[in-house]
Amino acid sequence: MAIDVVTFGCRLNAFESELIARQAKAAGLRDAIVVNSCAVTNEAVAQARQSIRRLKRERPDARIIVTGCAAQTQSDMFAGMPEVDRVIGNDDKLQAAAWRTTREALAAPRFGVETSEKVAVSDIMAVREMAPHLVDGFQAGLPRVFVQVQNGCDHRCSFCIIPFGRGNARSVPMGAVVEQVRALVARGHAEVVLTGVDLTSYGADLPAAPKLGRLVKQILRHVPELKRLRISSIDSIEADADLLDALGDDMRLMPHLHLSLQSGDDLILKRMKRRHGRRDAIDFCAQVRRLRPDIALGADLIAGFPTETDEMFARSLDLVVECGLTFLHVFPYSPRPGTPAARMPQVDGSVVRERARQLREAGEAALRKRMDTEVGALREVLIESASQGRTEHYLPVMISGETPGSVRRLSIAGHDGARLLV
Image (tube, rainbow, N blue to C red):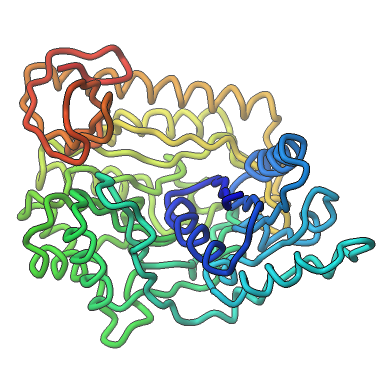
């Protein structure tokens, strides 16, 4: 049977799952399930564990291989699960040799295998360079594809385990990125999304330290056939002048940014070890709105960070309006083992859940408000499937009878609270 890859977490994981499937197949693995895990919250880890147990019940003869951020940070825990046959590290999962070794290990008798023998996890902090990954694993004709340009993070936010799952920041050289984008466009992909763990730190490890804005400009200049370029989550305090210049000058760079804000309270941001304040976030949103008045902004927000009072939370809630946010990605705070925030005074779990509910409700209201303003507008819609497309602003559109992969100029007639209607 074929290799199945089950993906949890971020867009970067989704991109890497494509590479995993290709590497595992090339190594000759058969009848195996790869779980590409996420470590961002306790819930994400629990979901991976639950999925592993379910998959083993459904396919008892399949070999279960676990990789991803949670496998990197909690390898022994996964190796200790009787359902798991192999645990592969987060950098190892992209290396052909790791999959060849895994095939050989799984072909050997498995009776009485020690937990430690299941683990193939190298030191992620020792990884200093990032090679570009070829794009031929993607199916031709997919409307939107991702290009990984950066991995890892050099910052140490007090709540975050991800640097220990991804390692230090490292970047793909600009020329290699441009060639990847050019190849994707030649294969018929209409929209390319640049992705990474800490995208706005792009280039700091490369010769001459080019920034993300320069990379964006190089792509737009040297791949004129590219219809749409989108960038994934960014840290607004690191956004450089070239990036803002490109946002204002080239309409092929989509008017949609997702911001890593996390909180609207200055003291909580300080305790998170974030590098921006509340005013920085508000001013940045106002600045990009002057450059692209129709821009849609999203943000990550954490509810119930340790020591957060009702008044502090209210400032996060107010930020939704003050920054004019359209999309919210809400995280109920989850203490991650080994992080400084896990040792701080915790907020009661029921309070955390209630604050997360209020933030999500505010996000739903903000999305409906934005959709109200779209009625009557003409939008360039990327047709994703037979039933859905997305506007330049990443707003979903219900469609029918269109060709996936095309970009159509459509008039917005209304919305149902979740999708625009044409």
